Image 1: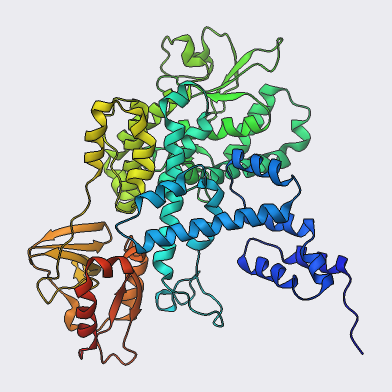
Image 2 (image 1 turned 45 degrees about the vertical axis):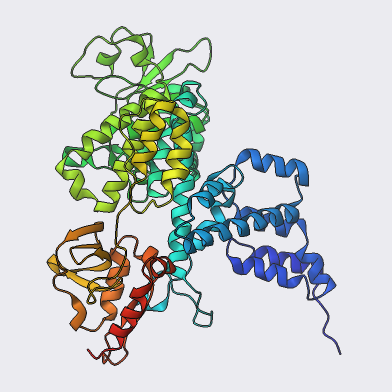
Length: 568
């Protein structure tokens, strides 16, 4: 006797329960399409595809999303999902082309950051960047552990690297467009948009920053719900300021004031948030206020940053408040506003220093703060070298964007932002330059690390591990005529003159060496994708190079195989 089948309504509830962002959820729904007519009806239900769509697609270009809804229908969630999924596949094919074609990357990168794709493909690339790493690179209890029954994926490390690199390029392309001086002068973007662009230079999405602010405002709302409903604007502003102080937000002191990430929103809004500099504190306070429908904005007051709150009506005054102190808000106009805000060094100020500042002026202030921070000894020790270089890249790019046609400082692109020269800087900054400056700008960007044309001498090959000072490891990326060698170290790609010292050629490749290198060497996942280690220690073993390095140095693959098979 056949078992009775579950009703379609129960199947819908089951599919709604399992619908999430993970690919397995989509696979489960799709599999139900071919089981029976009942499961098929459930798998085609609008509510199931609505939840799948909302779970998978947290990023979008608003204009593209509006057009899709108008063309396909506002509740045609299955059709909307299919169209976005096809776009995802196209984007992943372009990223794979970038991975496998070292000599043809700029055109695909420009397409990926264009309005055709951009943030519409962010979520698919983010999933790709979180693929589980090969077992040889995993820590004993690592985050990337995948079920043993899943088949091993090919080229996982470089796939992850290029997916993440493309994400950063998309975010930075958007940031440069926001920072375009013409857009800032036309008030197309707020300071909230402008400062979020800094975090793009460490591969963070601006939508993540906005979500962090939304979550913080929601938490504030839940804690102040009863009081907020009966408060006037000055009292509510004080409650929000007190909430932020309870959350750990305050003005940094001593050397920590110069932490290079103090103005990067993902950093001061993140889990380890705490003391930061005044402009970042005002940024957070203003953003929370605006989510309470309070018209709050940062000022550009000399020597300090305050928050200006516009009057909510004709019978109320504008306010000034300092989120970094406990001083009461001051109503404007006030002839002694800074005295009222407990300024220890009162001086006369222009009227516009007490009003909401334009985003361009605030961004220039941020740039100057960053330049000052990067010049301190503390900033060089507070973060690792790759992060410090990213901060420098962000600073020089923001300054160049604000220079609008008179770029005197060409942005310093970091080695790990391998797609940025055209997709971010040429596409984003070049249109703002005069014809007489464009050629010099492109020539400056068209520089890259020169590795080598052939493998010489025979004892050196790409992928060879060498011992560095302080017992750290580096990996050979190239060399030339035995006199120069490029290595991948903790500080990125470095070119050394002279012979490679302390070469580990007489030692077998150890598992702990491979895992340390994968964890600590920036861009390791761009150049290397696997490791073969002798289980008995009788052979030397080798690190497997990516297709990019195999294309650039075809002789080195055979050399590394010969070396690996020799007895240790």
